[in-house]
Each structure stands twice: as structure tokens, then as C-alpha cells.
Image 1 (cartoon, one colour):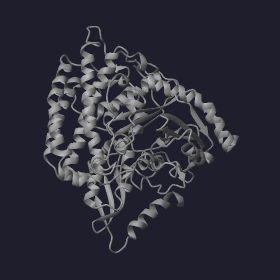
Image 2: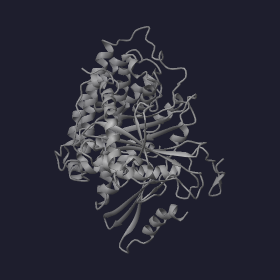
Image 3: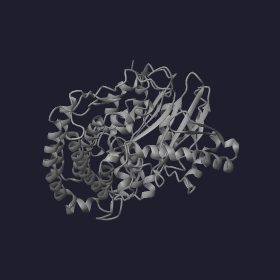
Image 4: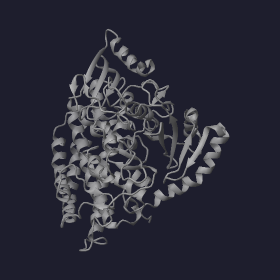
Length: 180
Length: 396
């Protein structure tokens, strides 16, 4: 009989042995410029990748038989205010191998309304990404290039600003209605 | 800039430029069959649905923003309100994530873990009963709805007894529980199981094998497994398509590895694998499995992990959650599917930098435009009901 968290630990262990191999595989396939670093300070190791390569690498991770990350759990965008830095984090899972993987891209942006940080959309790889990217656009103001339908998803279409940014100021009114 | 509004213009042009024989129908946001405030914009040709454009956000309550303005413990009541039909499961997932980051998840007393699993499974039954009951009423069967709500009320009363609240419990805390179970709770669980088992058989006779119900659901809205995975569907939705994927088994969190239960999958008994009937049936079977888990939990709570005078459910609750700067994604099996929380913590404060909730309903709903395309409007209602969404979680 397994102990508490036994299987979970096994996955983490298995993943750690996979990191080096996967890193090498990515560098061999896409060149050393595609790969930035592996962050191992967290419980789950994070692969930090170059923005331009994200779609190709995702496609590679999905279609390569030994990884087969066919399930995208989550995409979240993080704002590192006061730095001019955003990250987009992808949480993948592989159903046949029962593994998890975290990818991350880092973006610098000056927080101007007419110049949003841009990431290529991975909705062509996993359709899950379509709504998650719409949400990241809606709330964090990340523009996903090549997205089929990048409209706001949770807020009204005419909302101004991106509320999850740390420097967001609440508006005084919405359509003439005071909301303070 | 022009390119930021391009998609919106495209959408407006599409609605404005539909053909003469087509019609745009708004289903919801105040329609009972949308199970909450969901608005579906349907482009129809007679009775056929040509396109579905879902509009969400009517129940958006800024969970992400809220959670990053206060410490971890204070966010737990809000997690109850994500999927308000399975509050225990939500807070269990959230709390587990914080505990893993703290590194205390492996040395919690077994009694706490068993109580957590017990209340989560009770809540899972309650949630599935709503799914089954309201699905019946979507199709036009009124009686199962009343029967399911009658049985669910027993669970609500029990959980109210344990936590003091009927639906939104705030019972599972980081490092422990709000209170120990009230004296006699385990026995009452056993009584409930004894009462509930025959009712399940009755429900099967009434709905699962009902010819009218089968005609309305079998072969309707079949979701192939590859599409389900690509759209991020999880929970009963994915299992109905024939994939044995249950995070209680895959991740083996809490005490689930010690418990004996099966993972029901869709077999296409009445039609194609992954049709509406399969999705319904997987939920019915999961209720039976949850009953099994509850029996095992109460047995162990009454024998190995008995209530003792010195047992303190808050003994390991940390005064302050001190975490180093890190990221963690926790996922857990909710009644509706994979609930995930992505934490980004920051040093020297117990307020997270970012918490993102990944609601299962949000992802399950995203497949609806594919499933519903080319179906009749009446079948669309059957498909939407079988997805079992909770808008509190879609909009968060």
C-alpha cells in the first residue's frame, strides 16, 4: 500500500530525472538560443524559454512520443511590478505518462496602453489555450499574436485597462455610473 | 491600437452580416437551462444551430485580484464561492497547495486527512446530485430533480452541523480544520449511506434506464477523446470520453491512495462513447464510488483514527504562512474536473503575488461551440446540461 503523497512524490522524482534529458533535447532541436534556464528553486522545476520559440517548442513537446504533453492545464500571466516585467506560465500535463511540466516566458514592457507585451499564441497546439489567452489578455493585457479570436472574455468589451496589473487604477465611472 | 480591437470588429461584423435566413438568438443570461448567468449567442438556421458564441463574465468577482490583496488563510472563504456547489473540494485544493509549499502536507495527523476526504466526498455527492437532478429538469423530467434535492438536503444538513454553514463552509484550513467533527457525525454518515443506497437504485430506475431520457441523450453531443483532451476537458467530461484520468489516483493526494474506489468511464452503453448519456452515467457511477469512500472513511475514523481528547484540529495551523519566493501549481479532482491554483509567492510577506484559479467548468465549457455546432436547439440544451457547469467557477 502506498503512503500519503506517494504517487505525487514519484512524479516529482521522475520529472527531475527527465529535466536534463529534456533540456538537451530542446537545445539540440532548437539551438541554444531557444532555452534560457531551468528554475529549480520551486517545488516544480520551471523551464524558462525564449518567447519566439514557444509555439514550436510546445508543438514539439506535444508531438514527440517520449514526452507527449497532450493536456494543457493552465496558462497564467504574472505581473512583476515595479519591474517592467511580465511572465506567462504554461502548465502542461501528459496523460499517458502522468507527468507535469511548467514552461515560462519572460517579457519586458514599458506598460504603455498602445504597446502591450506580445507572445505568440499556442492555441494552434492546444485549444485550451484559446480561452486562457483571452483571459490573460483581458485581465493582464498580454497580446497573443496569431490568436483566432482575441476579445475580452470576462469583462465587458468596452472596458478600459487591465485590472490584474499591479499598477491598475480603478475607474471613477462606467458609462456615466459612478462606481467608487 | 488597431490590432487590439480587430477581433472585436470581426465579431461585430459577423453578427451584423448573417444571411437572410439565419437568426441570432440569445440563450440566457436569465434562462434556467444555462445553469446560471451564461449567455449563449446562437446563430441559427431554423431549428439548427450554426454557431455558438458564449459570453461570460456576468458573475466575475475578481478572485485573482482579491486573493493577491490578502494572506492565504483569508482567501479560503472566497475559494468556497468559486464552485459554490462543492465548496469543500475547492478549499481542499487551495489548502493543499499552501501546505505543499510550506512542506507540512506529509506530517498532518491522519484524522485530519480522513475528515477532509470524508467531507469532500459528501460534497462531491451533493454536487453530482445537483448535476443529475438539474439535467433531468433540462430534459423535462421533474421528479428526479425533487428526489435529488431531497437527498442532497441531508448532506447539506450534515455539513452545516460540522461547519456551521449550509453551502459555503470555510471548514478546511491551512494545516488543519476549523473544528473536529461533531460527536456522532460518523454514525450519522453511516445512517445516511444506509438511507441513500436504495435511493440510488431508485434513481437509476427512474432516470438512467428511462426510455425517454435515453432517447434524448444517447448519441447526442458525442465528444471524441482527442477533442476532449485538446480542449482541456477534465473530470466526468473527459472520463465519459473513455479516458481513465482521475487526479485522486494520478496524483494520489491526501489519503486517496489508501482508499479503494474505481474510476468509472464512459462505455457507450446506450450509444456512442462520450455522448450525453455517458456523461450523465459517469456522474451516477461516481456517486456510488463516493459512497464507498465515505464508508471506508467513517470506518477508519471510528477505529484507527478515533476522536481523542487531545486531538487538536488547529494544532498545526501556522500563525503566519511564511514562504520563500516560489511558484507552485496544485491540481485536484473536483466534482467537475481538474481544479488548479497557480501560486506565485513573494518573500517576507504572507500575501501572494499572484493566485490564478483554473476552473474545470471554464475549460469544459470551451468545448461547447464544437459540440453544439450543427445540432438542434433542443439538443444544445441537453449538451449544455451534460457539461455541468457552475458559473461561479467559469467567471470566478
